[in-house]
Length: 427
Image (cartoon, rainbow, N blue to C red; front, side, top):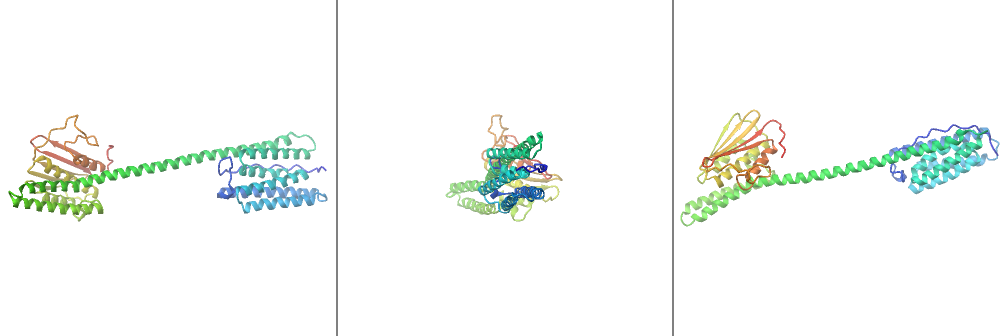
């Protein structure tokens, strides 16, 4: 029996934003807030279209013997759809509900073609629940059934009845597939960014570990290693003079013991916070340098200290670097130069602090172009870590190191650190 129902206007299709790739764009068990909002919108649209079609049928065909079946199927459709919205469940449960809804809808459309446009929300639901190929096949079947229903309702041939449902279905499918693929591309980009950030963080950790190892190497060289070297020299001298000059040997032993005690203090301080012991005791750089000069004035070497300029409070890093510079320079003077006197001069200006370490030792010639270079690219006239370690420490603070020497006329080492923010030169 054919019913002369008026043609309801199709609602506009509004594709939902996908949550995952198109091969299964929606996982009911892992819905986001946007997924839940879109599901609620689709359920509401389906129930509204269903209620509108049922009301139209009741008003126009209230005396039809099909009415009880149509009302019953409409109630089943509404209950199943709302229940699926209230309790999403698993993907399989969602597909089972979709199958039940589609089956009931097909029966209702065969009984009353005016229910055809309830297919629009079903199209979106199918695209979100099913793999792309299965979803496209189901959408094609739904669009075909809508076309047949429209043709049954039409009094004559109308091309819109033949073209409008496939166009709406194709538009919804195309937009949805595009959005899912775009979401997949963006997810891949996000994954790449996350992976890159992790790799960068790992690289920075490795570089930080390497830098810390290098810093510890310099700290140990400028504190413990220099003291151990001095102790070794003193103990060797004491061993040579033990029989011939016991008094001098005992003097060497006492000096070595004093150096060992200071080295122990340095080691404990190094473990605690890697700050020079003289500075850690609360003294300023000038007092620490004066203490260092007094302590190193022994075994034929006299060390003097002089400060110029105002008594400026220096940053901890700058003070520590200059004190370590003085320690390393004096250790090199004692071991290599044969000097009898050395001088430490601290000069504080408004924007710069400089430390000069001069001696009257044998000096050394300027290095040749083929001379070995330290890791920073500067010729190293002395062996060991001395000048390379000093240069590296100063460059970290934007400072510089200059060494002047002539054979037979001693040497002058000048360390300069800016007191204003500076960018350390590139290595």
